[in-house]
Amino acid sequence: MKTFDYVRPATIPEAVAAASAPGAAYLAAGTNLVDLMKGGIAQPGRLVDIGHLPGLDRIEHMPDGGVRIGALVRNADLAYDRDFARRFPAVAEALLSGASPQLRNAATVGGNLMQRTRCAYFYDLASACNKREPGSGCDALGGENRLHAVLGWSESCIATHPSDFCVPLVALNATVEIEGAAGRREVPVESFHRLPDGHPERDSVLEPGELITGVRLPAEAAGFAGHARYLKVRERTSYAFAVVSAVAALRIEDGAIAEARIALGGVALKPWRVRDAEASLADARPDAPAFREAARIALADARPSGENGFKIELARRIVTRALTLAAAGTPDRVPALPASPFAPVPGELSHV
Picture 1 (cartoon, rainbow, N blue to C red):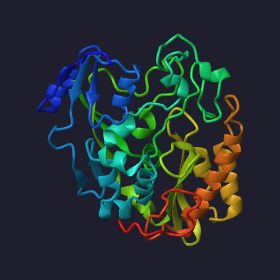
Picture 2 (picture 1 turned 90 degrees about the vertical axis):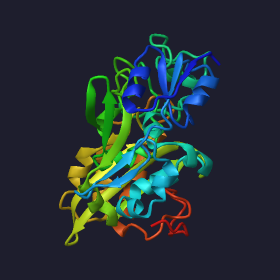
Picture 3 (picture 1 turned 30 degrees about the vertical axis):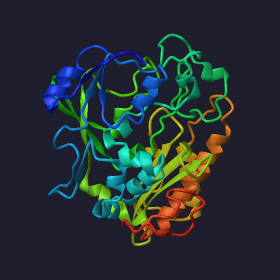
Picture 4 (picture 1 turned 135 degrees about the horizontal axis):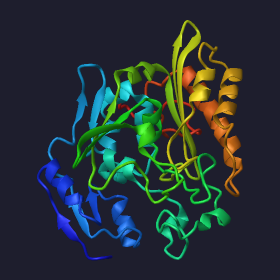
């Protein structure tokens, strides 16, 4: 591991100033960054430890009905917060489907947004990877790529974004709060992550030194609580990233869908919201034909990036299944296997 300086600022402005230096990186729990450093993929010259910055570890229920989640809130603490899970059940289910309990107890909300792709070629220093070394090429294009992107990819990168948490955030119009040398700004989560065209090495819209301070869910997002599900297909039910995932959230009034939200994970270099598919469900009956048509629209622009053509049909089926589960109603308790298609009945995790 490369030798680095270690800085532990006491305030957000101090952190931003310290991290604005070339080669600096923020450290919170380090569940992704430390692995990247050990493997030589990330080689920061300075680590800015933000793990003890005051005020960033709170879940705040706002007067307008929304919620603000500090960047240092742990994934497990958010998922098991009773009021949060009751109002935003698909977010809680997504969190509980990610990683292992030990990692969820350590990993932070801000770090979840910033985690890097799990593409094997990105982690292999002997392989060409434009994300790791711009201009070197993409060995995944002609390699083992059955888990790679089917939407939004380019010849420069076919990797996928690994987060479960970000998928429902995109569907529910969440916003990222950012502090930087130029001041404070807000960015929709839907616009936070970048597609690979132009600069595949840049995962997000963050500028050097900018720090995620929180994530905000609007009050309107809680209106989907009665009909919201996250569904994730993975190669093993425990401790695996999504082959394909989907969130479906519905507002049903007088037997018809008043509003729908749909987003996909595991299919692109960012969580993928499908607004055309959402629009197709407006005023429709919540039934199988409507859901199959929405799924068809959701994957209309998908194209295989190698040996992963199966993911397109799999994603259609997962969207259909997620919509069907959402229409049936959010269960009173998170299933014993959160987000798993093999968990047809509620389990015993009594956090809601």
